[in-house]
Length: 155
Image (cartoon, rainbow, N blue to C red):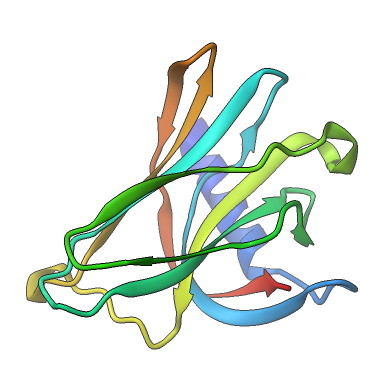
């Protein structure tokens, strides 16, 4: 029940994004991870694999948002490109606690241009996870929820 409530809140927050002062909002589709609390000594990484059968790569960006104000980027967006069948993990930059409006709570998203089409039945799929680590050990692995249209803050 707690996970369902968190996902509902996260999806609701993602859909209610309003224009912020510093960020431009771009309509994109995204894999949105549940809100997480990053504590001292904890690191996070996002892993993704392009499961596409086609030869064209997928391009997207990874964004770390303040959960109290989802128009606020907490770190520079990370752009990526993955060839078909390729995967990688990206360590997220550390977020100074003082930059967070609501403690160390963040929302991580992997966003793609709206023209990207996902359809596992025709060989176009993307899988991803958010991994929280401390003391060199993975403490949690989270999976995202796909949202077909949200406004993503971009620089």
